[in-house]
Image (cartoon, rainbow, N blue to C red; front, side, top):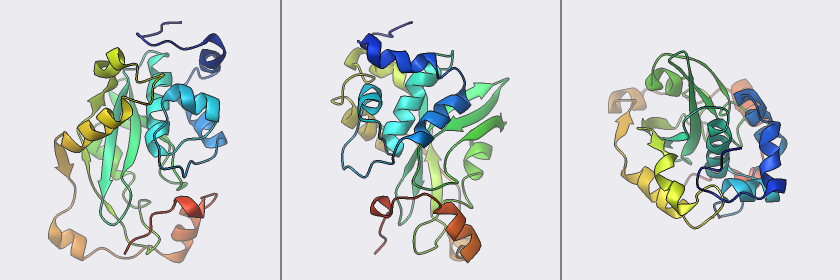
Length: 209
């Protein structure tokens, strides 16, 4: 198995033998608890601790996607009065899909059927909301290719993760909504709200002011 400049131990790397498709990677992330810890975990630590939040999960998914032939790319969805959300991207026949770890049911896997990044991101709009029932997604960054951090060992070390997070704050952003559109948004209805929170950990939910 290619190591991509990192130093995975055999017992840790063996998990990738089972993660042979994007949906199997998603299923692994769905099976482990959502992390409410205020730390970043590199992919190897996700394997060892068996927990992850959206940042950790996106990096783990990128590492796993790389092993089945996809570039290790992530994208940051940014929000107002809410947490940002990271996706690991992959492409099939020129169309985008995503793998993600989330505390919300609707912010996870996407099939590779989206012809542009904007088209992919907009599938998250209606299900991206806070506990005040406000629809909070406002835009996304350009993709960040994690290969540039191979020299730092991002797959097996926690130390480079702050640098990755800082870089996501610097990348050019694409805004989705105008101020007028934001002012006209409706709150989420009760049925959709409850569906999105299915299986969530209350300790990990963003608390708006």
